[in-house]
Image 1 (cartoon, one colour):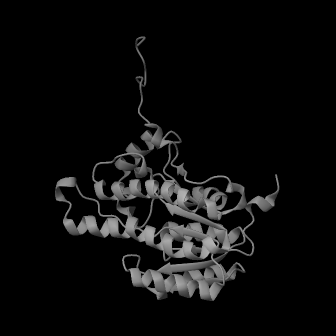
Image 2 (image 1 turned 180 degrees about the horizontal axis):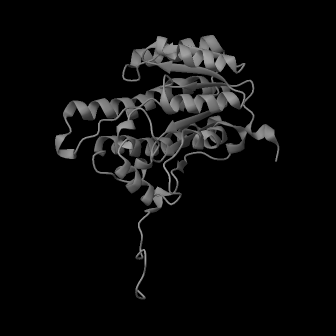
Length: 267
């Protein structure tokens, strides 16, 4: 197998939500595979440390301000990014947010914040970037989903709805744009520690509970996503579209014991 299947040299990858967390890990993985980056955040100044890091790797990194809840902001960013880079080969639709609450406590504003950011924003970013990919006859769109795209968790109703929507949106856009050489896939991480959920990982009892449910017996580390995002962004995935790739340590299998820890009788 040729290493060129995973080589992104000469390509530009646009990553939304790149001022921290998984967005930076994903961008770093693509840069290490040879891609130059276009990075976005609501505040452009927040991107400067990451831009400097990517440039130190010998790659270009062009920062832009973007509010995915504002259509004018999306349209302006897409046009300016394309004008600056001259091409956009890869889109990583990563920007997202969450509000953890029991379903009875979720407000109208909570719901709108999460769905407008995670689902509506992802669609319109993809739409604006696809306007450049379709005429070029090539593109890789990677929507960031979650294990909540395929499983339900108490306290994550609106978030799960947004990520389930991302999975469905991925399939629809794959069907829409496949004839133009644009693949659309969903990368769905399992339980990874991020800035959004760090407080939960400070609870040792909860972490042990989580590890018990994961077949690989540990939460994800951000570098566990490196191979998956490079695969979906590169020529190696040329015949893969409309799919959701779960990188979750196996928790989506159900991960519930069907036997006692020390069976005392045949069941």
